[in-house]
Image (cartoon, rainbow over all chains, first blue to last red; front, side, top):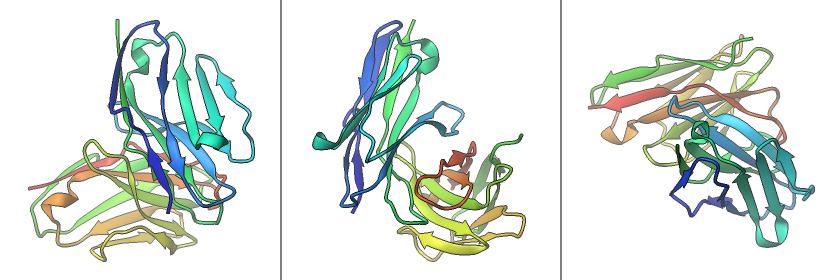
Length: 115
Length: 114
């Protein structure tokens, strides 16, 4: 069975602080895919990143960076110099390697960035 | 280029009634998946449609059914509504159904069962 755990229910920071959202996953697949999505109050899930299990290179995109560690089954997301517009619920998700695979989501972390 | 569109955006139904939710995928996408998101929870997979057939199904009762049309749009039907069916229903579309494809989500339909 596949499982994603986001232990942080809610995080509050002040603008310009750095913040890391944790994600731990479980899967028996040797090849799998990890995702992060952002859900603003409007409800739409916005795709942020996809990472393949065979590529452990960390990635940076502007103020966003992701740290994938297969040894600890973690795929953490860091926002540098947070902004009020970053306030949202963030979901980590996992997908297996065979066709027609569903996305398995964590319970999400609500990030509140205050001015 | 329109993204994934869902209708209606909000819906209030009475327990025991039936409801139909609609989804138009992003242009060029042929696979549609439906998810249920209860308040404060992550989305839960309901089922996926590709080539007008249900390809995979999550742990949902038969009261939940769907359909995909030749133009790739899709409907989610829920019969005999229960209070527990109140949730945000999200539609996601992708090009093909492989595990490496990126899923684009609509804004969802908020269903309230009273």
